[in-house]
Image (tube, rainbow, N blue to C red; front, side):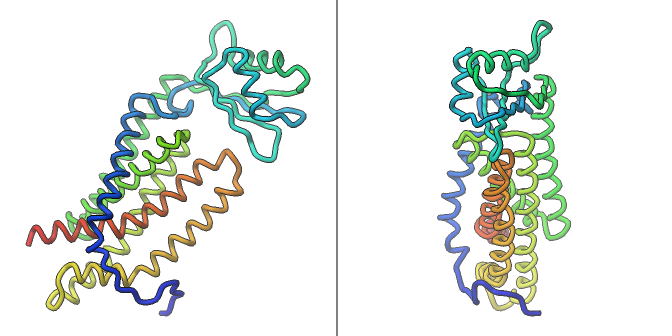
Length: 302
């Protein structure tokens, strides 16, 4: 069957570029490890989903800038408040680690502060969501467990589908993608919430699918070319064979996610950004991380 090709037949030495790719990946993984430590210590930009606190949705009757609203809350002594504007509306999401007490609700406290410092602006609080600290810690623990279970399942599946070495290589590549996203979000101080965890699991699945396609072609060619070609030649030939398919799949996915990224508004921006970067990193890792790892280990065994 004939398919669209955005690149013609290539002859790129991917195995020869492995050391440069490993250096880049080492930097990304180190950043990811730092991000993981900071998340574990609670020093990253964690949402109220994980830390516990309150999220309010406030609607103004007229245009108010995010600077005005931030100034109004800061003037009242509320410093640990995150404000997110909902594009195309006069609505804002206000997140704080404060929780309701027996005497007063966070909703009432923030409502009084806005009314006192923005006297000429009419508003209403149209939504309130509170997450207890215990629930937040449980969600963070469950999120980590979910990621670990996903990685273990990847090893089992690939080991059954191919060999154990392929399974380890795919898992390292997937782990690389997850840590890379964690590091990027930490460096740019982007909020990590439940949607971020959803994005990480989605990225893990996407990366695995891409890696399986490459591995399947490597396995086919290892059987066909074993007698006349060395392992590096087989792997390079296999990656070059599926390169057009890999790029078309990644670009198609990236275009769709790009629409959400630029048109989905503030609420979906971080989620779409995680998916967009994850698609790029997942494509990179299946070619420059997973496949070279198979080459290194198979060569050591021989």
